Image (cartoon, rainbow, N blue to C red; front, side):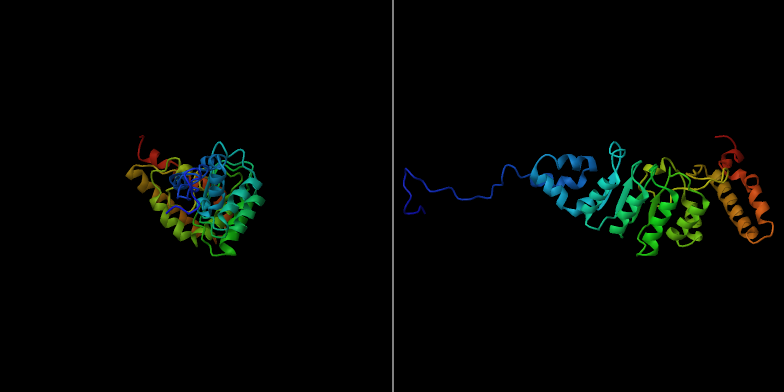
Length: 272
């Protein structure tokens, strides 16, 4: 019904309808934000105020943060801390793929604000050190619940067997669990990029060079069986000689005693 003051020359003002403002993003676009990568999210946040508020104000978009090229070489400790703070302390997964400007102190500040991190991938982050990563993992497992289940350390400099033993003891709750899971480590190709791999740790002690690195398995059954037998033989011998008075001598000779375990399965079973 028209108001009594309305006339043909002066029609009543239009009533407010459900139509949204032209500056507001469409609802379908807001749903698509959950499928975007970090670079796409940051680009959307620069288009309009509505998207900027939607990207920055929704902590669910930041529970899993993946920093990959070309942003890897540009991200710093301060920028990474600002991004992880958007999760409001609920960060679950942090993947830093080749971020040389991230330091131990910066990563420690992030985990101090996000105690429930379950995945920490830092391959080729040359700004991190082995001692710093051990401190971070010990902080998550020693002082808090210990939800961290997977780490990726390939490309970190100066990681030795001592660091690996500490990380295994924290991650796997004992070496027996890690040894049991080693039976399933087959068909390893580009493990750094394989986020579906269920192993707790991506690196291991190379049986040939005795360095901590990615260790690959042969895909043939006979090679795998030989490799597993050699692994168990080495593990058994190491337990026997651990308390032996000749342990130092055996340790010095171990590269020659167990040199057949490093890709030697393919050599033992014949050429491929």
